[in-house]
Amino acid sequence: MDQYWGSRKVLYTGGEKKWQSEDPSHKLLRIVRVREHGPFEDFANAPICTYLGVLTLSRLARVMSPHDIFFLVLGMKNVLQSEALEKYFLSVFLNENFVTSIVRDLKELPPPSPSKPRSSVLTLNPHGYPTEAAAITELKLIDRLQELKYRVLCIPTIPTFPLVDGFFFLNSPRRTLVGLQMTRAHAHHTTTSTVRQFTEHLSWFFTNWEEFAQGLSWEMIYVQHADSTMISKWQRCVPVNPNNETDAEKEIVAFRDGRVHQYQFVLTRGFLSKVREMRTQQSWGKGIGKKVGEIIGEQSAFRSGEIYWEYFNDFYMCVPTGSRQ
Image 1 (tube, one colour):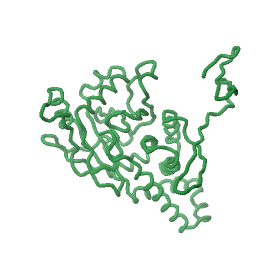
Image 2 (image 1 turned 90 degrees about the vertical axis):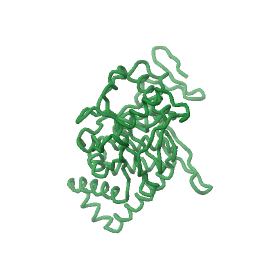
Image 3 (image 1 turned 135 degrees about the vertical axis):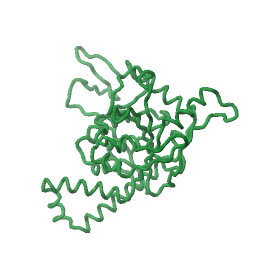
Image 4 (image 1 turned 30 degrees about the vertical axis):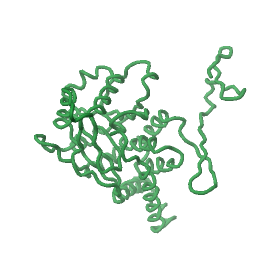
C-alpha cells in the first residue's frame, strides 16, 4: 500500500511498519521456503519477480562468464518454477563467448520446398549478438509503446506469451527476428493462431511494428538437452481447423514455410565442458586458474564439472515438453 507521509513517500510493508521509499539503505528481498526430497526445509533468496530477475540477470550476463551465469541460474532451480528458469537461462545469449561458441553447433532443420537451406544470421555475424535485455511485461503495466531496437534480447515475463521464450532483432547480414525456444519435446509444431497472437503482441508492445515487419526474415532456434528426444524435421505451422482453413491462415502458413528458417542447438556435456574451460582460461590469464588448480587438484576440478552436469540435468528435466506451441 502506498501512502505519502509528510513530504516523503511511505510504503507499508505489512503490519504497522513503514518503509521510507527514498531511503537507499532499504533492500527489497524475497525469501522462499524450500523442501526438496525429505522432510527438512531450508530458506533461500529469490528474485522478487520475474521482471526484475530478468533485468538483473541480463546485467550480470554482460560481466560474468557463461560458466558463472550457468551456475547462478542452476543454483536457483529449487526456488523458482521452470518457466522462470528458462527465461533466466536465456541471459547467456548476452555473452559474446557463449554466442560465438554455439554458432559452430547450430544445425538447420531442412526447410520445405522451395526454400533453400542457409546459414543463420548468428553464424554469419556472431558479433551481432544482443548486448542488452528488455523484459516484456503485461500491457496494462506499460505507459507507452516501446521503441524497436536491434541487438536487444526481449524476454517475456508474461506466462501466456505465445510461440517463443525470448527473441531479438539483428540488422546484419539481413534484417532478422531471431526467436529462442527451449524444449524437451521431439516435435514443436505450432498453429496459425499462435503465430498470429505472437505478431499481435509485438504490435501491442512496439511502435511501428507493421512497418518494421515488412521484409523481415525470421529464424527460430530450438535449444535442447542432449538427453531429449531430438527434433529432426522442420516444425510445421498448421491451421486450427484443417478442414476450414481461412485465407489469413493460408498466408501465415505460406509465410512460415517461405520466410522462416529453423535451427537446433543441443546442449551437450562437451559443450558445457568447453564453456567451463573457457572460464578457466580467462581466470588463468589473471593468475586465478593456476592457484585454483594448485589448491583443488585435477580430480576435484573434474568432480566440479560432474556436479555442474548433474545440476544442469536436474534443471533441464523441469523444462516443459509442450509449452508455447
